[in-house]
Length: 223
Image (cartoon, rainbow, N blue to C red; front, side, top):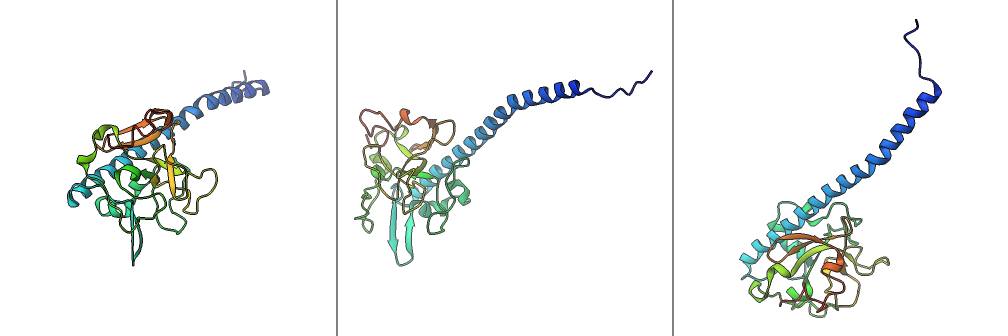
């Protein structure tokens, strides 16, 4: 008796079909698991940024970082000010987002937007860039309900902003879109990753904190 019988064509086709079905079932599961891992890392990074802000504030009379300032050395943005308080620049980034790691000048950028509309007095037209100030933590009525950072991208999307595709200067919901300003980016599972001023981190759909709120800036103002 011949015990080395080869597979028939039909048997091979059946095996291939089974493998294709398994792949179709498992690949989305693997993709979701990979996305979940990136979401976790994004949350860890923005938590690191919020903790860096806390340390920064201990050195600056309990005040939040400025949005930006300019001197003979060039433009310094909020993440540059926090940089000495973080271990590495990877915490500036949100893995899984579609943004570049560098801005239009080639400088390292951040995938998170800072609530400068309320935590500082930085004007949207940059008119007070040389004299802007930031508020103190004691000015925030409910730190656990006030956005500090969130994953963000340019408010000009899908058009291009001359500052690049990031949204480091975060617009409150009531403010109009503009170059160099951003809005929350729901990177993972249609949710934005948010660090609040008390440093806890959550993930919410835009409808949960940015759009359709009453009052409009409910999660951004100091009340």
